[in-house]
Image 1: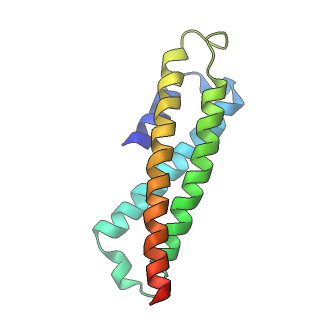
Image 2: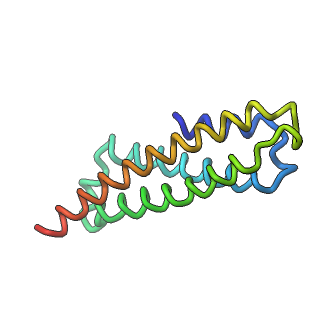
Image 3: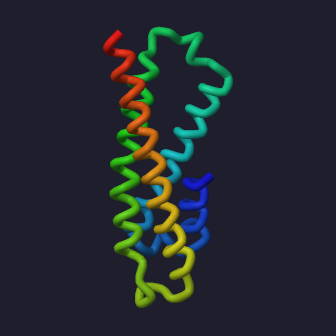
Length: 124
């Protein structure tokens, strides 16, 4: 839900005029779609039908990459928000920046728990 807020707040503006917001949109939409995809896989328990895939490693790589790219996108988003750039879209961009950092912290926590799960799985 929070990732959805990031890209909808930006998508409602003229973000395409500023390349930095294009990067933030790419990261936000890409990881939102992948997160929904993995949510469906886990809710339907499809992962139990595909035992060849190391799901703990996949989860760790996904969450780790999401954390790193979202951190970069959140910093770019925050650095790009200025009233001089566009007063009309300032509030939407500022809110998207806040939520990008919230999503980053969520992916950081998920990366930590994925690492613990991965480590316990590899020690067995």
